Length: 144
Image (cartoon, rainbow, N blue to C red; front, side, top):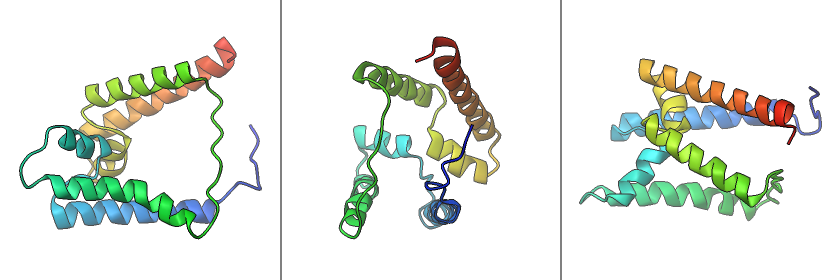
């Protein structure tokens, strides 16, 4: 494994992590809600009266922030080394895993671990291990 030193951004990454942590803490302290994306979107699919506006604002912020950022600088070009079929299968597997795990990486990994939730610790360890195993199988055993 080699590090692309031109793309290595530890300070920007640290700043981003701090901002995510502060915003997740503020969200739970000010609203009493966990900033898990699957839960936020799930609440949009089964709307409850008086619970819709903050969810829509949350999603609009997720989508709008990169668009606002693009007004000031060029967005990086993503490079996805997979076909459409692989992306669809991966998306479905992530969705099933999110449902089975009662939450997503943001809910368990960011918010749950920060609250020392045993369920979130197990869930995060499980999806990280599954990701490591998938990368190993795809890159080293299958050779894709």
